[in-house]
Length: 132
Image 1 (tube, rainbow, N blue to C red):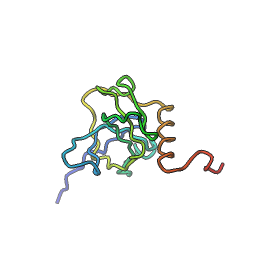
Image 2: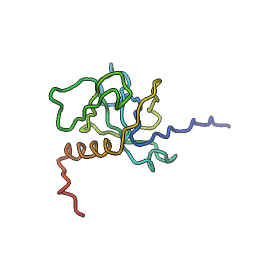
Image 3: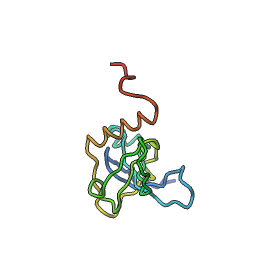
Image 4: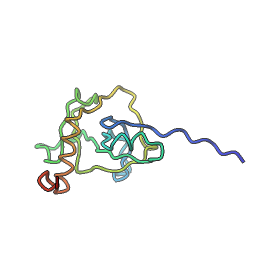
């Protein structure tokens, strides 16, 4: 009995923006943009079925929360100003990732470092807490 071959898993790169329906979102929510933050060794590994992402939101807080990062359309390629919700970093199955129809930007290493700092802040862990 032959089995159908599964399509290859997406291989997102760190800093890329993809769309996904976040499991914790209310059922009426549609797919939202997320930034892939896991390492490329995980993202491109065919045996790894998940990636870490940080969701983007067009619902802006004024002033922004300390754990959020506001990004302009020029930084993301999205139509609106967005906020990265770094306190909501989550694991997503690669099969749930959907590429955008429009060309989106890839975040820079400096922006990824800022995300990592905000995730640490959300966890209550600060640079001085790390042992060298």
